Length: 183
Image 1 (tube, rainbow, N blue to C red):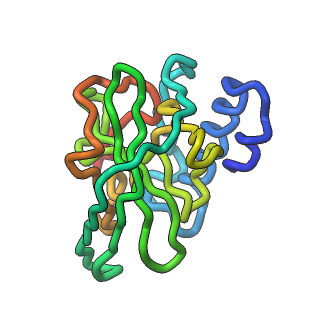
Image 2: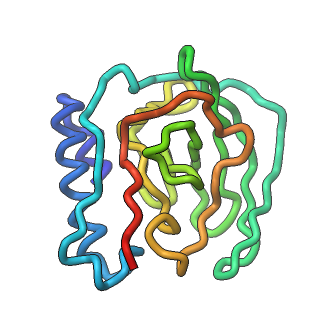
Image 3: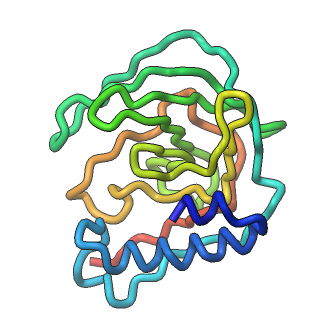
């Protein structure tokens, strides 16, 4: 899904296709976090694409830090901070390396929007293929592609959530919006 986004020159069209594919994945994949009773009618709410929320930024040096996130299902999930990205006037976010199983770059986000899941969203999670491209000199951080972690849909899932270095003091009103599933 993300490979298709990276290969599409028209980012707004790529975002529309991502929305379609993500909705289908969440409604039909055998490992979806969406409870079975909600799958047939499931349609995530995603804000319209806004190019002002797309950044290509260098990963800046940051003091080394290790976070160990205890989970009930995966044990302790370790993360190593590998840097920070500055998103213009919005602020900065820590960039983490998932230091276990598949490894990968991880950038969670917590913002002040009432339309965001209270625990935060994910912007980049390369162990799951959620990668818009770039590298240390120019990493693509597009907040239009921010998505809910699996735990937003079901308490059966445990997710690493944003720490203090992944909080923005602004409302990020793009990306996937939170709409709780009724029991």
